Length: 247
Length: 288
Image 1 (cartoon, rainbow over the protein chains, first blue to last red):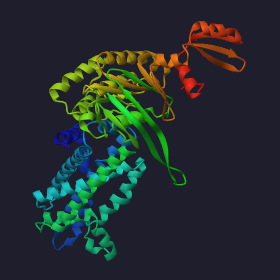
Image 2 (image 1 turned 60 degrees about the vertical axis):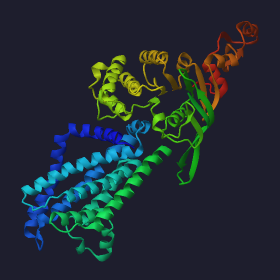
Image 3 (image 1 turned 135 degrees about the vertical axis):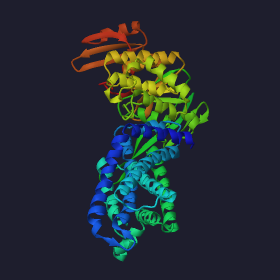
Image 4 (image 1 turned 180 degrees about the vertical axis):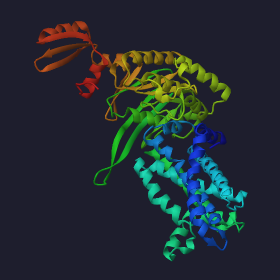
């Protein structure tokens, strides 16, 4: 693996993104605008929390679920490249190592996640949210998008049809979007459900971001759990790519 | 240049009853490819030609067997060996998000070429393939023949020592096919070793110095088209009777002529061709 190879894989994704940057930014603005309008401005105006406004509460949650979606969806084209267009072969034939390919693709997804996170932050500021920006916050966002990019990559390499990819969205991402401490605290959940939800990476991302955005402590355990998820995801992604070559 | 020993590939298949079984696509083949030759893999669809190319280029791992490039064992991962071949796949597999020139640039970058080098190389190849006017076209907008030529250009960007061409003229009209044949001959003259798979007998006959006939994953012959015909008999007596055509092979025209009176029906003597060899060896009367 070398950085030049990673750069090449990333360059291709950047070239495609650059061409559609305006459309990408506009499309990425819609969801946070709706979330902030509905939950923050509309519903949230009547909800008072001890720690501040509901708007301040949900912004980190929206950032967490957005970085999850951007990470996962950034990898969906690989499914078409593998199954339908067969253009993945071009990478497999080349001297680029599987790990360089995987890191390059993850980097592309992380870039998209960061751009859309910035859009959310800007939109939230316009809505009057109080968010404390920090380097740690961006590290957590990057880590979360890496985890879900790896999950997306694994699914893209393993699943046969586009419908199956959509099912991952329905049965995995969508429930996590609502259950993992994004719109309400996991403390409100029954104990059994809470135990399960606390095992999921998005819960730790939401809690970490919320703590960092409100000037709270850096939750080291949650951060380590995210690192563990990222390491497992990388291993599984690499294994899926190698298994694809084994056929 | 390439030596292959006991290469076998078995694909795992899962039946309707969820039972796992293994289908042998390539069955214990050994052969070698010499520098600067055009080597043909001739066989029907599903014979295992593409699987052989995919193993030789590291796209899939063999179940067993060994592959050597210039005496060095190839496990499918060695980046230095992976730089040696160029591959023209059977299907059009461009990156649809990129235009023609960008597809070539991606290839150049993947093979670690410097910008100053690949810029000239891409221009030169687009000129050579008569595609310069289409450099900025989306690949989806190119005609079938243009896409095939662009596939060849892409495979040549990094100056491969050996070019694998998987059915390069499939589904092309005769005019474009002949143009690609000329291109292949031209590349060979310029020192590129070429391995070509085809199910067009004429293609193997016209282009290949040596041809391996493959059927059901096994090599059933491997020699020059001339030697393969010679082994069968240089002349064929083709007899069209009430029960269809029958064939008999003879060493020379004189011997064949002596036997003609023994046949009834419409009889003709003609030179033996690769199709006769294929039919005789595989028992497939309707060609490929």
